[in-house]
Image (cartoon, rainbow, N blue to C red; front, side, top):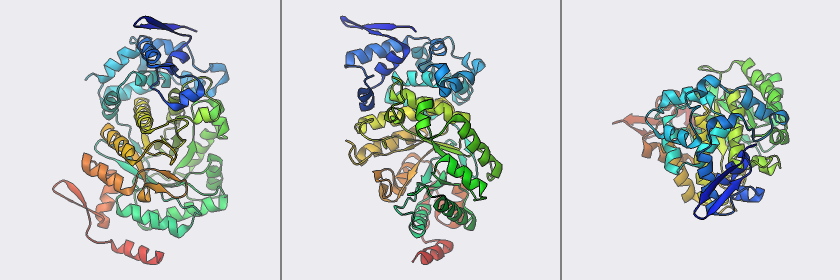
Length: 464
């Protein structure tokens, strides 16, 4: 295990290991202080960042932050590393990688080719020495395109997950939120419900309802009920129409065990989803959610900083060729990301690292009610991620999830981002919106239709 040092002014700071220098190089956040791994002052943080910048990328293949023998995520990272893809940057240091990423040589094609040659630890390391504008600039070069019934991740597109949660899983309440979201052009990434109960009967009923809506109105989207992967497998075994298989994941074997999962169980869920063959354009069908602090909250971080643990989760996601990956950035709470500044930085880091590793990243731009953050902070992160080329965001009535009790982005927020940045929904969904008369296009701009589509007038009447 190597040690590292760097002088700042009259002080020389020493770091005992790669794990130590990575943690202390992280921009300040409450979770790392809670874990006892953060730099004690700005001088130590700058020294760690300078030391980290000088570490060769090859060193990350020699020193595992969590031992290979005791962690299946580490084994996945090492065993699937593409040495041939790595040769393009194998001669560089972390600082050299940053310079290359910012150069014109790092274009969309070269970054796509590089992705399997980078480990999560390399991606996390370079993000720690990048400014906000660096994270935005590099991420917007990268496009990770996936397909199921729609095409996600194309340049010039911004998709949304329509999230019609209800505190009692009331079908009429869920249907009303779905209708509301569709009328604002939301839902091309998916229609995804966080269920209030994990009852298999209730989950199956919601899946049946979502499928009926999608089939009746011929909506080119996909449905998901965010239940445990074992429940999804059971629903599939019962013949229930299920599009996307969901699971929360983390960056260590022990943290995943706290979710009741392993890589082999995820493989089982992936294969079960594939067996249904429900995709019309492709078979990317896994939907994963992550968030900085999950490994720490499970006491399963092994001294690794929370952002690096988060990035390791993207190796798990990447392995299963997901349709969507969502960092629920401010949901775990201020113990991990204390305020708007920390949430904004974390969202940009997650998006950058995920895209760099070839993962189709989205972000739930959110905060809990006891965090030192507000909707202005979310507007800032939304705008920055829109510029950075995020694949999708959330769309929730009024920004306020009445079931999960947290603040996120609304249907109107998605409209703001699309109109301000000149972005469109997924192409298949855009065509459907035009066919339904919800959106019209004139002078290159997308506008609302002047009246409610006849099919939706009937649906609204049925809702009472």
